[in-house]
Image (cartoon, rainbow, N blue to C red; front, side, top):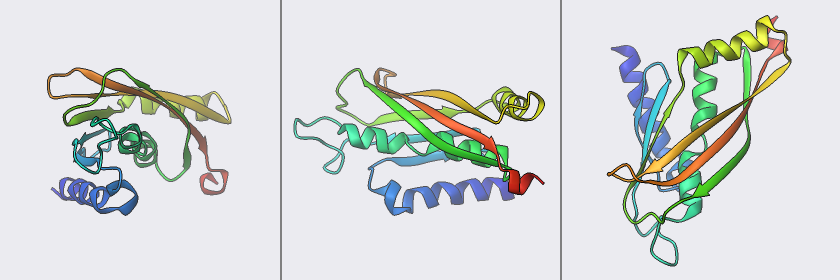
Length: 157
């Protein structure tokens, strides 16, 4: 119950945070374990570009922080996580509300920990892809994020 309330508060916090709020995106769901987040990006006066479709900056801004945040929350304080690079492929103009679903599996978390701890690697770059789709499931844009992960030597000791 407490974790469910906490995840709702995070959702509300994202939606009120000025930097995220200005993207036009809205977080609709945060899983209690931070392994799934869902967002929507409505087409309105704030997210519409000159030709009447969803502005590319709003598309990217609406999906930008989530893989980094998910890894920060699931890996814990002994890890340092940073966005490293991003690539966006526009496939079809957005003329309606767009949706995105971010997921990270237990296997992915275990693989990161294993690579950093067991294999002794200093840092890892992980690549994640998310599609922005309309209500019918048509892909309008695909964003590929590269996230840098390392252990924080000052907190690990």
